[in-house]
Image (cartoon, rainbow, N blue to C red; front, side, top):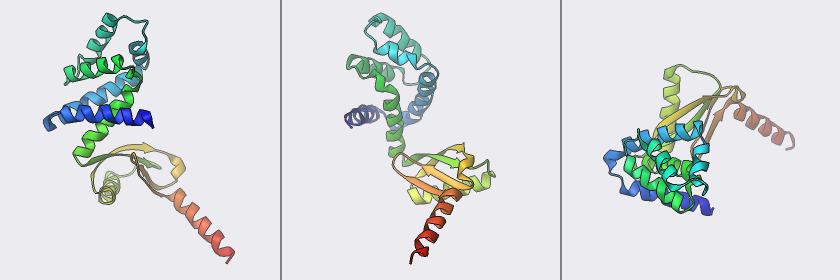
Length: 182
């Protein structure tokens, strides 16, 4: 609970200092940073440890931010997190920054799970349905999972829409079992 409050506070602070015109650049930076930290998670541990000197950490941060659009902002954030002993939360913080930017743009990122690849027209209809339900523009991260059998399963940070065939079959079985005892 305390960590989520702190993560949210850092993310909110970053988004508050950004101009709306910088949102797109920030989102590109976030995608790049997530890729870097996914491929090389040891970088975060190196930045956290007290065994590595400050000048070495500065070199690492300079290399990390070299290709970013908002270099100075990221450098300041990294140094602040290191100073406050919070660098281990950097991945969560950048994801929360992304969420705050999407919220300001009335956009939501949805993990959309499908049983198999569908025609683009059907996928677009599912996304339009989700936009209607969520009342926001939807950015869909599509995954395929045969276990849902058909339909779809959509998940945001705080909401789930389970329109999978598997879930509907489960509901049908439960309904029939409940009616047997009446």
